[in-house]
Image 1 (cartoon, protein in one colour):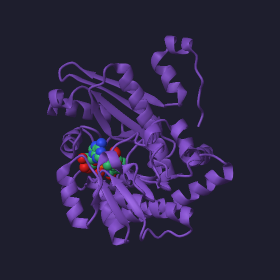
Image 2 (image 1 turned 90 degrees about the vertical axis):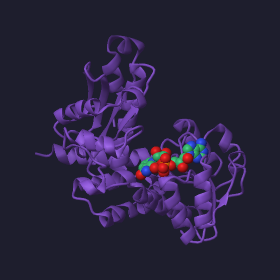
Image 3 (image 1 turned 60 degrees about the vertical axis):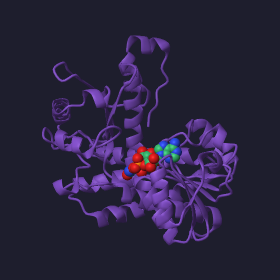
Length: 367
Ligand code: NAD
């Protein structure tokens, strides 16, 4: 996809449009409502493959520019994620500016729903940070263009089991690339974060006979998961020095950084967390130098968006899981592309995403 280099003057003249030009965003909608206190930005990055879909994040940004930068970055990420996952969705995202604990009300959410509705389906929203499925129900009072609704409303419910399954098959594809066969039996795997996704991943791994280590900041979660799956707890200050085969980040982003890369002894990094590489262009290259195979996060954790996609088609969990299974081939193929082109795996994943969009844009252009 076309990327533009811009000068300081470009930014001074057009602070918003210049930012949109960098990664060729299609549309940005600024929303304001004095009565409810709603201040939101909806960013539509690319709709070549289909309507843009991405969650709404509520966050107390320091300023508007921070919010704009975040929504542009996140919406672009959704374009790539859906493209590589092989689903017919484009990339979009929304941010609501403010402290969710202080200003989130039914009226504010419904006003936001009206803004989403005004886009006529070009943007479909879903849950993200500080937004719950109950909030989605409220937004849904004003617009049909909401996904991730609870099962009792005809929605797809919690996407985590599908996400976890995608992580599991992606890990198997990574094992095949590294050791020549995809069995995880006997492999030592560290799962950091045993929440909704992490626990289901631990379940898959245990069933396959992997030796599972777990870490979480919640003592309660650790106790529960360690007992249920006979997984071994490892303290935060020790986990990156452990002798392991696979590291699965399933808690938070940026855990692949200068510090951890100096310590990690694993052969594979493959987990659910978003934005695992602290600095993509630095740590995405460093992993390769350390002979660690990095399975790009947005390829690995696409089960969530795949799940929501099937909600739009009339939800069927078997179909969602069937599609998530393809993450195995996608992961394996991107490793082959990275080797063939001599590029880091994160870059190969980006190229796969771009290739599909460019190919479909060409057929769309045929009269
Ligand atoms: P979750 O909130 O259910 O679980 C996260 C777990 O990580 C919690 O148990 C929490 O206590 C733990 N945690 C938080 N900070 C930690 C730290 N510093 N060290 C160790 N543990 C810590 O979230 P989830 O739904 O399981 O998602 C996990 C990750 O995967 C998130 O980064 C999320 O953005 C990403 N993801 C999730 C989905 C999905 O379908 N749920 C889809 C795509 C990506």
